[in-house]
Length: 152
Image (tube, rainbow, N blue to C red; front, side):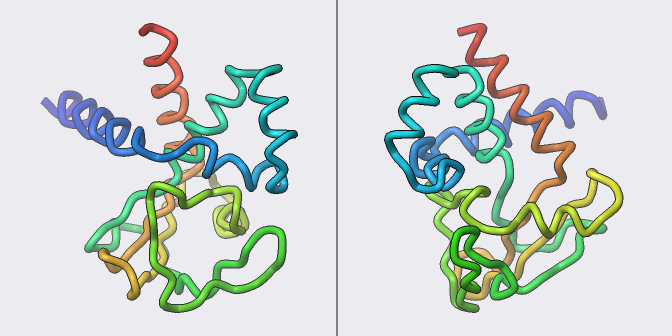
């Protein structure tokens, strides 16, 4: 029974992240260079798909803080290419929010283990918390999403 609940939760998580725009969330990975991204997409489509799935798996919004998660203010997050801090009223748009556009990885690297969930207070958004999944969970979901696409 426990296994079925976990599988159902995983499938809901995978279904919930499919709506995100791959090109929008991947562009920052390539330094906002659309030509470079297009070349990579053509030369290494499976790698591109996996990196996109990894970015899609990074977040979800929540009305509560997950058990064991550390909470930070969204205003502590910096844009990756400018080091500009986000505004405390930052509005989360899950369709375009990119793991690669901000220093979210730095928050994950604060911990010695890759299984730590981190949460950001987002008072300007529809939900009060943006949850950054653990690196382990992001990898697992990305692998699940790309293996589902290969079998279709």
